Image: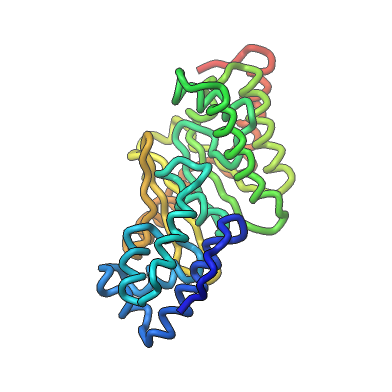
Length: 280
């Protein structure tokens, strides 16, 4: 059973809660599958909680306290962890992303959040919330820029992005913002920090006409996929679904321009923005 001291949410909370969950489960003599059964989740889901890949949700925390006799430990710490700088629908995905060893993302309309500049992110959030106070928008932008620090490491995670050509052509924030944003992306690609491909308009129908997709891989847990829509999103761990999403991304990669040709196109569009010549 975990000790009486509650966790400090400022210091790797998911990893510590996961370790405490494993300790409490093993003390109770239960396997991951046996703990998952009354929660109606798989043993691999429990493993993801224990490894810190997934966030422990309140509904599960309450039940786990009852099953393991941990006197409200997981519920209390789960409530503390609920205070997040990210929107509710993206919290779990952002935390999984932070420990992923590889991230593969297809974006239909926006430069992916990990690659956005301050000006671009501000324009996006202001478009989403036109009446929000400036301080609220500033907090959202700051959280997005802070999240992007995970690609500062020169070795992990592998970040492979496929963007629709519409991402380049839609003027988010105006020409100067787009020039800076696209050059930020090309700078990361030239520094060999990311791999980026563009899915051109003349590809026609493709494998992800339904929308954007993010895949995340981990050293010690099964892969996850994340799909989102306005103000909602879902992290998926069903093996068949994730396998299908991996195939979808592979098909997008095959349909997109090569990384070399993609970089040339992005640089060309950035040049057009800078000189006011961007065309549809």
